[in-house]
Amino acid sequence: MTPISDDLQRDNEELRQRLEEAEQAIQAIRAGEVDAVLVETEREQVYTLETADNPYRLLVTRVPYPAATLTDDGSIICCNGRFADLLQRPPASLRGRPIGDFAAPESIASLKALLHDGRTIEVHDTVTLLRDDGSPASACLGVSPLREGALGLCLMVTDLTERRHYEELQRTQAALHASEERLKDADRKKDEFLATLAHELRNPLAPLRNAAQILKVKCPPLPELQWAQGVIDRQVQLMARLLDDLLDVSSISRNTLELRTEPIELASVLEAALETSRPVIEACGHEFDVALPSEPIHLKADPVRLAQVFANLLNNAAKYTEKGGRICLSVERKGNEVTVSVKDNGIGIMAEMLPRIFDIFSQAKRGLLRSQGGIGIGLSLVKGLVELHGGSVEAKSAGLGRGSEFVVHLPVAA
Figure 1 (cartoon, helix red, strand yellow):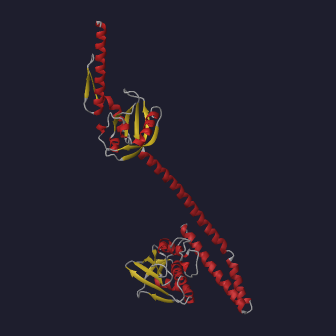
Figure 2 (spheres, helix red, strand yellow):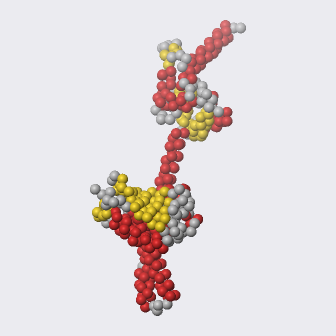
Figure 3 (cartoon, helix red, strand yellow):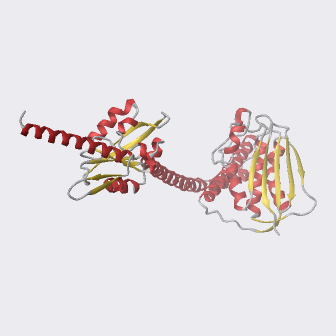
């Protein structure tokens, strides 16, 4: 062997050892096993973890999501605390390790594809990572290339799960808002339609009522003709009352119904309601009890509208109670509030209908037993009028066949 070849062999061996030492030193820095490496050159240069990875550390600490920077082959350069928390591991234990070490077996292929595509474009996909205790953590990883830095091409990995959930929440909220606006628009059009319909249907009632009165006066006193005239007259009055209720409900829903309030005594309002409902109660043969307090109770209310409330409740009690039933009207004052109860022993209300009994067009299936029906606006009108007076109304029933009770709460005037 010549001296030249021996020198060359020694130089190659020395270079190989220095490369191995450099590689070990870099790995030691990345793993946090040493603080610095002193490189002997013409001018001594100290490389530390701070100086080598500082740009990447600054980058990931400013990201509001779990994030890490990777070398081109997928080894972790550094990560923020959120990324370490995601894997439930200390940050120092992650540096220098391939991110594939923390992927579930079924997600390794997806992760490799992400890292490969992330070298050129920004991509994201859902990958299952494994925590320190072996439990899975589903994460939407976004991978994008970093083209700056002394370490060459690096990758930025962020967990976008929280952002994806936030974006999905925003989309859901936007869809709900749009749906709510459509429902409001449909409800508004419904109210306008009901108001228009009620007005249009009221127009023919006046001539029908006039014609019924003329028949009453001019027709011969034949039983058949008198019966027919009575039917026309009663049905015209019923239709007029239904249309009035429909108009009132529409006005309440559009906040256009105005009360004409004045100081009144509750007894006079109940007397007016009884005057309206007594013929219905007597026609059904019901026993009717009234219990009023001895002292007067004063309210500030619209006497016509409040009488309409109690007349509706009494009519309902009469309609939904079998002939020969019992209806009780009672009043009780409690401090600054008065409660008016209309109770019957009629066919009752199913428990599942109680929360919706005051909804417009919501007629409980009380028709399982015989009743006179209705279109389901009376109780909605009652609730609206009572609330306009600053009160509330509740329905009670022990179930079908066990009667029902409607309780109105109203504030007492000073």
